[in-house]
Image (cartoon, rainbow, N blue to C red):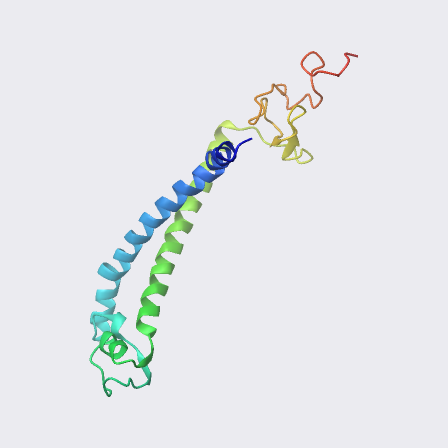
Length: 177
């Protein structure tokens, strides 16, 4: 195989495309969460605490060479070369992370509940001694135990999850019994 065909097989694999879509949606979701924190949550908290902008909260560790302390803003301290501990920015980022984490948790929980409801409504209960997966007899890829067709090679596996041996008529070198 050529380098181009190898790359094409890698890039168009389903998991990689799903990952790219998830990354793009995640990046868009992060901007919404940052806006939620910066524009809707932090202003009321800042109003209650007497300051509306947490990003300028810092602890001065060492004065800068360009100008002596005190500094009006974090930006002025950085421009002066001061060493600062930026706890306000950290708190804002921590709150953003918590909002994203809660939103992802709620989304995953809703999907899991919907999946369970669909399984309860339409699915059949798995036997407790039944394995979750099996190997396709034709391509040896792992498939769900109840699958009637292999998702990888589309071979017919039977309606009851079997057969697990290849069909002799379709497999070269295997004699019929």
